Structures are given as C-alpha cells and as structure tokens.
Image 1 (cartoon, protein in one colour):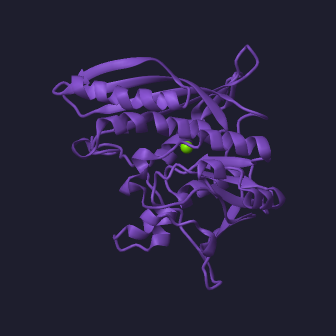
Image 2 (cartoon, rainbow, N blue to C red):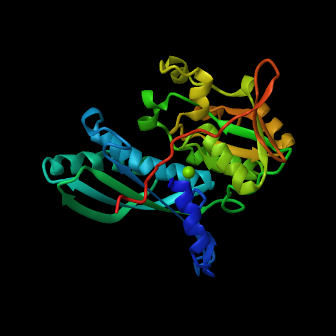
Length: 311
Ligand SMILES: [Mg+2]
C-alpha cells in the first residue's frame, strides 16, 4: 500500500464534520473557528534512515527542515503560519546534544517566518530519531487555495527550478510562504500544491483533485543546475520531473493572468522567477518533447510504501 492509497482509504471512511472546511488530501486542512476566520493545520514527520541520514546531516538542518516542510504546506494554501508544535523521539544515546541542535535549527527558521513554537512532546527510546512538526496557520486574501480548482485551458505555472534537490536544496530550501501570499494577492490562483514528492507526481495530484489532465512542454521545464549535475543514468529532464523535495509552488492560473505573471515577475525581488510549464487539458497526462512529439508520461516521484505484514 502507498501513502496515497492509504489517504484515499481514510478519505472514504472519515465522517463529515460541520467544522471541517478542507479535510485530508490537500496540503493543509481548514477548520472553521468560531471567531470567523478558518484555521489551517498541517503536519509532517521526518524519520532517520528514511528522510535523512543522521551521520551525514547537521542536526540543525534536520530541525530546520522539519519546520520548513510544514511552512511549505501552509504556503501551498497561500496561508500565513502562526504557531508550531514539535514532537521528537530522541535516541537515548546522544539525545541531549541532538535535541539542542534540532531546536537551534527549528528556532532560527521559526523566527524568519514569524512562527511561534508553542510546545510539543519529547520522548526518548532505543530507536532512531523521529521528529514531527504540526503548524497552525491562517488563510490570507480570498481564502485557502486548494488543489482542486484547475480547469482545462489554465496554465501550469511554477516558482523556481526543479531537480537534484538531494545535492543540498532539500535541506536549505526557502518555503515559498511570502511568494505564495504575493501571488495570491495579485492574481486568482485556481489550484496550488508545493512540490514535495516530485514535479510530475505533484502535478498529477493537482490533476486528480481538479478532475482534469495536463500537458507539460519539455522546452519550458525549468531544470536546475543541480539536476544537470546528477549522474545517475537519468537525464536532467527526468530528474526535474521526478526528483522530490524541490518545495517550489506549482499552480494554475488563467492564461491572461499567467502571461501577466511571466511578464511582470512579481517575485523577482526575492530572486524567484515564475515559469510556465504547460497547460491543463481535459484529460491525459502528457509531455510535448522539444521536437514536438506528444507522449504519455507516468507521474513519478517519491512514495512511502508499506505492506500488510507477514502474519
Ligand atoms: Mg504539500
């Protein structure tokens, strides 16, 4: 079973609740608050051995990433982060130093994004390091941007460049919180996701939730320098399409608003460019290659898998 199959399994069973505006299956949930403004909630867990190799990674960067991935999910809703709770399972041996270094990384990025760390849970055990962060935020402007609003004819747009994040960006990326808020204030973002699983996989999530297809233009895909440096028997394009953890924004807007974004580049002051990658279409999932051939592609990216057990 994959994490996505499990999420769908849960979505089919979870009862509706009158206060839940957006439930499982988006970048963050939205819950109605009696004060009027809904509350955004998202959570993410990083595991030693699966999400990072402790012996090769500065623990401060692990702490930073544990919060940053959540900030990226709040960004994907065009939300503003407010507070975070952090739970850690620390290895008994060396746990104290690790805990302090994790906090150093966490608190620095929390300060940068004006997010209060308001609590959590600290456990120790004989297992590896696990760290889970939950962020609570609030929507901005006209409300949370969901994954489900893209329509055929909309442009596929994205911030930044893709591929090769394993060479460093997966630990040092900037969550696109302020970028998303600015885009949301300037144009109608019809659907949005942050690219954590991989460009093609996350575009496929947008398509599934929106009930449409997509066609990517090879000549338009912004391929990062890191993707070009990867030497793994895959082309730079394949890395850009399938490597995870770029943490860029992938979104839908009308062609007229997309044209305006490309011309005006409203994120340039932060060194972030907006690119067009293709177009949403009624159905199918395709790539138009640089020589004009249109072919079906498989959405590729990182998927957590688990089985039913041996008993
Ligand atoms: Mg996400």
